[in-house]
Length: 134
Image (cartoon, rainbow, N blue to C red; front, top):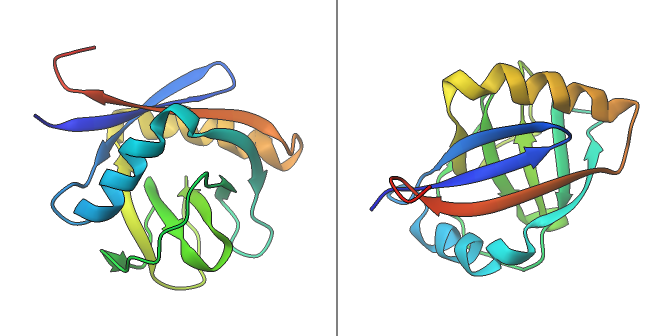
């Protein structure tokens, strides 16, 4: 059954499809960590339009290494962080993309994520859910 992340940031809840075919090992790590997938968001200063938080696990898997696009969620090995690109940006390079915010929720997430620049440490929580079992 297809799985997705339910992401809560501020007063917004957005959904992201887990890319289980493209990054199966990393998606498994995300599922294992899901009860602890929450933290304090920081806003990227170099890449712009990106927020990130410390991952509660370590993985050195290189899966689905692509240049992130708006809505992509990836694991950045070098800093052990979960990164979310919410609008047009120039990423530092390819990242382990394991999920993608669904198009209809991107604008809501982007509006809330953009506030993190002024509110470093905004709380974020991610929960893995199965489609049809909401």
